[in-house]
Image 1 (tube, rainbow, N blue to C red):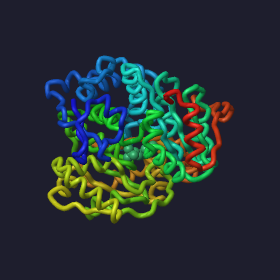
Image 2: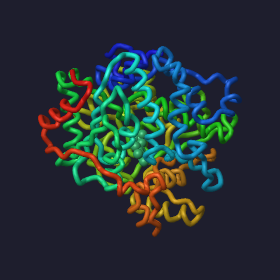
Image 3: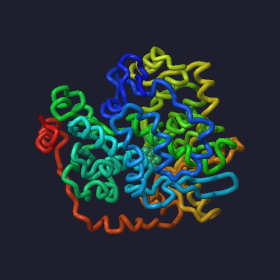
Length: 464
Ligand SMILES: *Cc1c(COP(=O)(O)O)cnc(C)c1O
């Protein structure tokens, strides 16, 4: 399998290079050069598999030619074998024709584990095969940092440095990162904001010398391998509710569009899907886009669902590429306009192609809180604020297919918002119960590129 860039000006690469490089050399995102199809005769056999075995089957065509291809079944068995629910991604019925897929049974209680636990193991495999080492650098406003750290802790081939804004992430979020006891994990508390952290990371990647010296790498949400691993639970949920004989709809709490795009890939591979419902919070750039065809960035406002507080969804570029029938020139045009005038507009037929498969809706802070309270009353189920946006949006969407809401986080990760909405403080799960007593390890640094670079160079084992 070869991968091409959505901007059409980078060489096609195999899976291993795509995994390690993340972004294409022309600034575009990687997509497979053709979508593999699930063999119609195979559905019956797929329905009998457990989650790890299904994952190996669904991902296999994407890693053809990879040095990790033969190890894939072992990788999925190890990764998902550690999840805390035997079904890995269990479906709960919330109401007539309404289901919730719980995607928070991994180590950090949010859905990003489902992909990152695979990606970390793939990194290790590919780096070992190459005899190489990398330095993974990332910035976090709270949630993604811990999932990334959990995915590579203890790796012999990768060191990870996560920058968070000092004093500006919750105690639970910080401790999920800083109490991980592994020699290759390094937390840096930057005296500044999340934007400062992100700018430091960007500056490091732009520094050619540093990039080569430390073999810098990222595991952010534009990495194709993350999308690939997320395709699996769409097929899993579809099979549970009767695929391929019955169409289902998915309602997805959306930020960077990585999760819902993985669903779109599942549909491309042959999963019958009635509709994808894109759920936004008050930061509703996507909802406005689906209504008007115009993508126009506004400032981000904080909400109850911080992982969906986004300006522009980076993975949307992949959908633009598909909807414009893989016209890389058109994508380059959209992206140039985004940079120059912080917006772009797409016309029919591409817009119609998108609307045929996607609906969008938003949930205000009040609607999200009300949905948490109402769902608790109606079915005794406690939602986290991200999942609640998708429940709200699914209620107002017009479609008659069975609808699966993607539950992206455990309510205990957002105790204040959940308590304010429902009067109940969700208990930290047993695994995290002693989190507040564990020893923390992190370094405080000023928001200064030189000092951060020196710190990382000194500690990274990839330094040459
Ligand atoms: C990351 C995240 C999202 C958004 O997912 P995208 O793939 O960025 O659209 C939604 N909910 C939670 C809890 C998340 O951590």
